[in-house]
Image 1 (cartoon, rainbow, N blue to C red):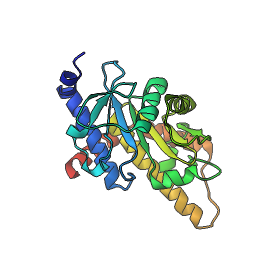
Image 2: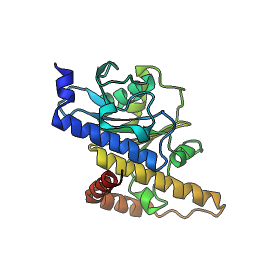
Image 3: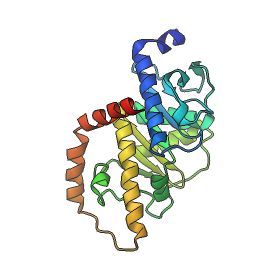
Image 4: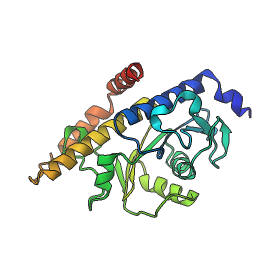
Length: 240
């Protein structure tokens, strides 16, 4: 297989450009953390190869040419940069076991703050933004330190089940999807929902969530409508 040739095809270049845009947009909204955390997207050819941001670059500086192609063993197949080990173990596990095409892993502030609470996650009946995630969230209640082996990535992936959002205890979050634009839109609104919850909790006034039926209704309304997600991503492309 000619990995370098595949890396430079037009479809893969578009994926690299979109992945780089998602990283820069996340940095723009304060969702990045130093040179840590990673976004990845599988190639659509069923080979198991995926694209990943490299080690050592801040998200706001990542361009399409910085993105690397790797296999599930962590070998860099194409690209000019190395990759970070924990990225490989988490992302390879979620791609392979949970079968998600796009995997976004962050330590974004408000979502991560909720992983430090006894609830471990967002209340998906609390705000309108939170309700879009109702029925979509898994909680990993176990923190095992840095994900330095494949078993930990696979454990996290198995715990996700059919969910496309995971709150990892004492760690951060994973947001998955079938397209980069849609996964990024979810990532953005997940942090907004978590921010609203943390601010409301800090008021000291009792919270007033909607009932579960209403939360499920709003989730159905928002999950099937993705034009807004596409428009948001294209607006970010113009801006960034």
